[in-house]
Image 1: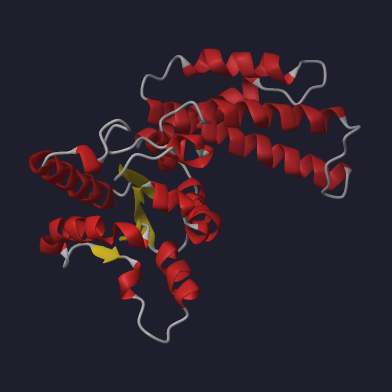
Image 2: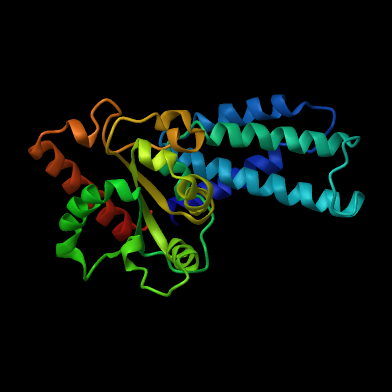
Length: 260
């Protein structure tokens, strides 16, 4: 029996025996029971699987309740509705304390095959992109590496980007002040990439090219970067820079190979 199956069975047993959709017990008290149970799991990915299964069961029970009692809608005066909303809040909050990779392992998978690499960058940083692509070049028969240079003249570029994102397993973000200043990246491209990470199992690898306040963007600061914020690529000597790029390729190959 696979580890995930074992953990999901344990979570289902816990949900049915220890968590009650009862207005006699506050959601926070139920959540404290769950926190105690989580101590039995050491690895973050195991905790994430357990939390994910409990969340699925809560949502399933909650949706059935709303369908039978409120025509599928939330009723602010219903104690059970409020209980479920509070418990889901605590579950999501606990999940967000876990490393991004652990959360992404249990995120919903798209029906489409995800096997490519998508690079999001500012045109100002195209020289850095060129350096990175050199390291991926030897593996072009193994890795479907996509950046906007693949968009041909006359093509609908927004549609091409969306199509590429839908197949992406590894998302490489090249962070800089110009990246953060790009209206298209922040308003269009980045939300779609974050959705692919949160909902469809894509993994985000961020490389800090030049000093920038990426950490003030809540959606970005949750993801561990490949290099420390105080050592952007711009500050690196040639050897350090090459080592970072090699590690980026290595991590990408590992993710694609293991399917995490």
